[in-house]
Image (cartoon, rainbow, N blue to C red; front, side, top):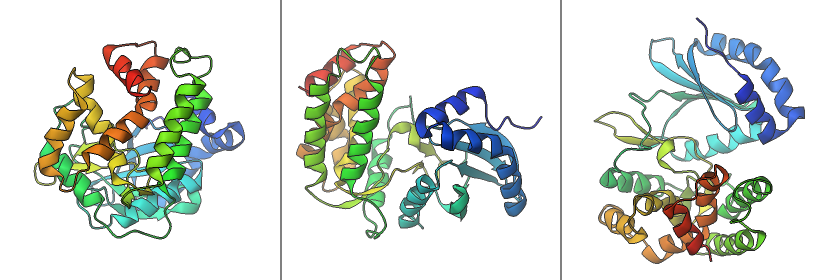
Length: 295
């Protein structure tokens, strides 16, 4: 049975992200696009994976190996992701690019085996420290935007989706404006590195015992590398611990960790971390701590 390339839920998600004018014709033309790229690269589509900015297809390559075809309606999304992945070419802690058709919004990536997310698993702190250190150590490319752009985008999306949701009583305009100001101030200051921009446990995959955790799906920029720590430091907090628990777990494995800036980023991004559970109506001790941090 052939994979379903686009279902109603995926179509609705892409329309919500890109608007109907761009997303509708792209969804309608997706089978033809996949057929063309499959012929070009010798791919057989095995299954599809959801995504907020497009479709991810797990494929068998011409040599029988796993390859991943990422597609987006907006070629600029693909160009930005490729710019980050190109900066990490040769870094074994980042997924590697096999080929691109950027005008078509397509990136062909190596497959990672077993490829399971780190989400919901114990954090391998030594390996996460090594991953962060490698990603943040590469030369700065000239074609990546500043971290301030990424921060502004994240708050713009949140501010657009909070009104009318269950999160609205908690994520007030004042709370979000204060957090945005804090985050932009941090983004405009401090050390500079290539920042992944979306480095949560769902975007780190297990690539097996020899290679270990590998980062995927960057939203790259240039700025303070401590930005990439926040989603990891929230994990002990969500389990009933503290930010310091995460800092102390990571510190031995990440030389130069600036605990003060890491805490500041966690406070500045706290409303964004609370957004998804609050929208689902899930007010918990974790979201309460995040809201307190955002004051």
